[in-house]
Length: 113
Length: 115
Image (cartoon, rainbow over all chains, first blue to last red; front, side, top):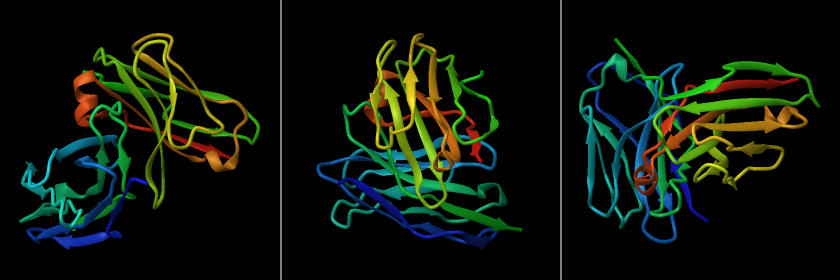
């Protein structure tokens, strides 16, 4: 079946550190890939997406590249801020399947000043 | 802009009681979804709707019912609550275009505890 696996959390970093959150997927076919972010006490919101192999999604200093050969979509940011503390979810979906997302388990990020 | 609004935000039930969670969206979206979020398991799709009057099962539909009588509302019902239904429930909505690209808008969540 289709699934998404993320690195275990929580991840604790100091401000301005480099961030990588690993995400790999298993899918039949060619899914679109997403990173959603959930700030404390809020619902999820779309952070970035990529719809085909080698696409790079980017937003708010975060980037992720769709790697078909390694079935990965790792999230990176060069210099994290305290305000980036949140739970990050990797997800996939297939075109014309009604927007149904398959989520990874989420990775909690805590950034200390 | 309200976006996606869920009520109630918190609820405690006893085993066997029933309740309904209400989701309302003001973006005129066709698609609506109910997910549950459990520690270490991410979000799992319970039921979804592709338009007014339609509903469909997701990954974990057992023990839940839904209705979409009005385009802006999507109700999630628990007829006989069980402790295994203790979770945080998220409603989401999407336009038809957004659904093809996986761009969903989420509510703030409803925390349900079943004792």
